[in-house]
Image 1 (cartoon, rainbow, N blue to C red):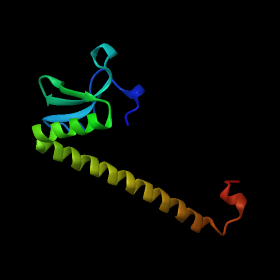
Image 2 (cartoon, helix red, strand yellow):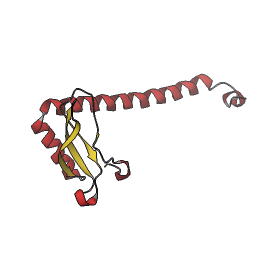
Image 3 (cartoon, rainbow, N blue to C red):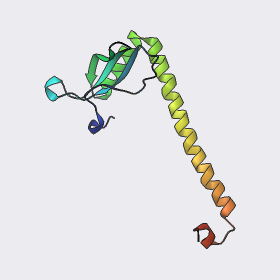
Image 4 (spheres, rainbow, N blue to C red):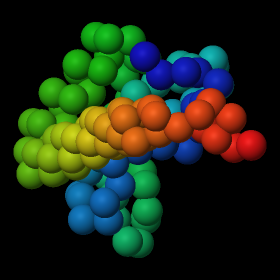
Length: 120
């Protein structure tokens, strides 16, 4: 779920590749305007980011927002999925590399006296 303290008055997008016509994100709004929400936005060079639909900041609201994006602009929805999958893969790869680095250092330094491993 989205941390409400990190919400912005203007829509924040999960993906803004500069090539999309529509995007999806979240937005902070006063309670008098319905409060924090997920936002479906139109992206353009002239107008910038314009919220065109808003949904409650709930699991159901997220499902409705995504469904609306898919119906309105399937190409942007597919592009967002590809970008998010690539990000997830990059994160997984970094974690695996860090694990392998730590394992390699342990193997390489395993025979050195403790004071050398501690940097003394």
